[in-house]
Length: 319
Image (cartoon, rainbow, N blue to C red):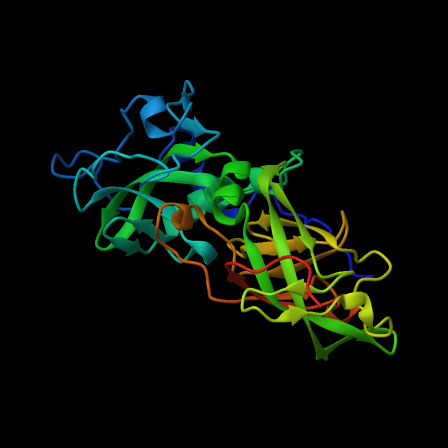
């Protein structure tokens, strides 16, 4: 059976030595910039009351606002206007392709990238994403020559709030690969429907394959057969059951290798980046793909593959 061990990362990276002093001050300035230039923009800070930024928000001694919840209506996190084109608020997009801002995505300079990745480390937390701060943070950013050159985190959102905002109560439909000749065969595509719980805990949302043992009405009105109807091809066997989970795993194998997981148990999961919600996704940018293409981590044929889309409606027994 494929397993999903947490990749070991080097806490001390080559880039860290070059930026340690800057990180200690909470910012990072690109090489060659003139800190005494009176016309240079400064990194924007968040002066709003923490409770105005998010419901029940709290502010630490370092000025970072922590949000355990998000506003249900309008912007989930409420930020002031950007001070200017060269000083903006934003969040890292999926895959590390830049900083999403209200005016568009801005590439990260090498110095800014080094700052972000230097913070990544293995964490003792039960929530994997806690070890990758960029995945949950909003930054104040200084921009020069079309690139982000200086960053300071201003908001951090709890993992439960992020995954719940994206998937709580969601319904997913698509296909799951069937079992044949001692393994999983991608050419056998069985219809599947997944219903997600309304609340998250420990960075994960419980979900259920609802047509595991009974036929269920699909979102289009068709009747999806029970996966157990054909014992020979039924993908739910051994450690693969109808009880699954959804959770984020930022920087899974390498920096910015951001994956959304469908977990079968503590050791086995399917992964696919298409449905990974970045903090930029939460803020209204960096949309999810139309389909989530999932394969088992490790050996793809050791577990079922899935191709899922988010749907509305359906549900309930049928015949």
